[in-house]
Amino acid sequence: KELLLTNSPMNVHYFFISDRTTFYSDIVGLKDTFDEIIMGMSPEMQDHWNSHLHFIPQKTSSLNNWLEEALSGEDALGIDRFQRIRETGWSDAIIDHAAKKKPFMGICLGMQLMFETGSENGEEMGIGLFKGRCEKFSDKNEIKLPHIGFNLVNHPNSKIWKDIPNNSPFYFVHSYQCVPRDPEIISGTTNYSNKIVASIEKNNLFAVQFHPEKSANLGLNIYKNFINLIN
Image (cartoon, rainbow, N blue to C red; front, side, top):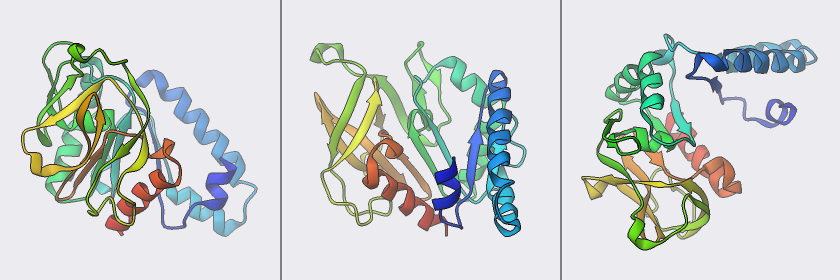
């Protein structure tokens, strides 16, 4: 927490979000910890961080006022997860945000939720920002699941991949893969038994199956490129 507050770029906002009421105390406790650190800073830095750290335990009434958003996670695309995202207002707010052509990025589970349907617990509805589905890797290929580890990603030098060498390694943790109807939105692929979608770009919408935050400096460059698109 100290490193985040002392080394972060001054133009970046951080959002700590829970979509489950049971995690309310966790978010409140996290805010209290940050507040203790901020109290020891100069008045100028206190003002800065009080306006750049956002703690959201459940409801998202201010969502549409944000300039950028990221939907992330590591769970399976399950009915409980989608019910939560709908009950807390995230689904409608994300659809509205995307319709206004504002930048949005989904990460891992977030990318899967952006599709129309998934098959974790039968046929399930996603947010529907991308046409297509999320499905489990085929059992016929006899591969270990979940897919865990670094894989090389083949990509063009597109907006989200700016200044990142082709075939760079990124960290994956997933048992399901996204299958878009329109192959033109695919901006990165990797191989795990067969070619799978690693990233997607469509106008203001971006998504990655891997975890940038677990992919060292190359992953941080993904976030940097997204932030630059916002700015």
